Image 1 (spheres, helix red, strand yellow):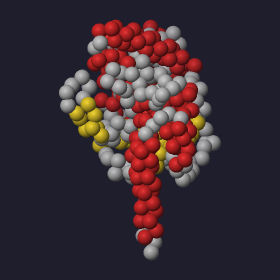
Image 2 (cartoon, helix red, strand yellow):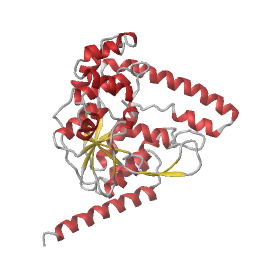
Image 3 (cartoon, rainbow, N blue to C red):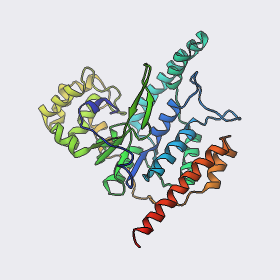
Image 4 (cartoon, rainbow, N blue to C red):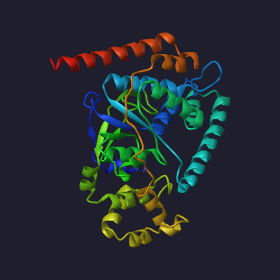
Length: 344
């Protein structure tokens, strides 16, 4: 559903300190996309090592993860598996958008327009299998659990939270709510000061918690109706939603028909917008494959492995990496000593 539904749902601002001690199931792909889109040079080019390999994702992942670990937030990184067949059209659409952005980037480059170059470069972001592999290795070296989803990562993350093995899903999208996640934490990857889009100056971004039950109570619907609402306004499986229907009109339509989805989608003219039945999308979301075969075990930080990945392999500054790790290890030691003191 992306951000379209967020204008309808209640969110509570929180802080990293308030999230301390809680376990968050991270939508890893979205985190990495955010880092690849934002961590770029002035002209929009990605950070790279001496061999020309992209390092923006590793820089963002390391810096953000270490900061969250210092705040004593427990992280579980969940990675996407095989995408549903219905998502293929969305992947094709995104590919076309990237190609259009690449063409506009080349025009901006010829004009030497740095602002335009950065804007369009961010829209060409691609997350490769090699980047995902590197991210998993770095997360594991930091001692954090990696969970491989059989299909959609957000569905698996929601499953982990529903089982009580995590407090919330960490993501920018509302999809995890459709998958039944009791809680969603937004802005975890972008918390802090950031430049205002297209404007001078900065704005402060804080984490927000969205609780599924409060969403359903506020909207006056149940989880199945939330899925139907998402389908009307657009999901990854029916891009763009039904033409002419936004969040508010979609909610009115859902509440009008209650659970009579056949009548609702008929009135919405689903068949004029998509060449597959609404049931294909509904049950793809409702029955997304998940697994119970995961281990959420936190291990000691493997400092040597982190240094090998970042410094030896990708030319990160050894001083900066060592400094960040030493600070993190000191924080962990202080936490342990404080915990022992409480038992004395």
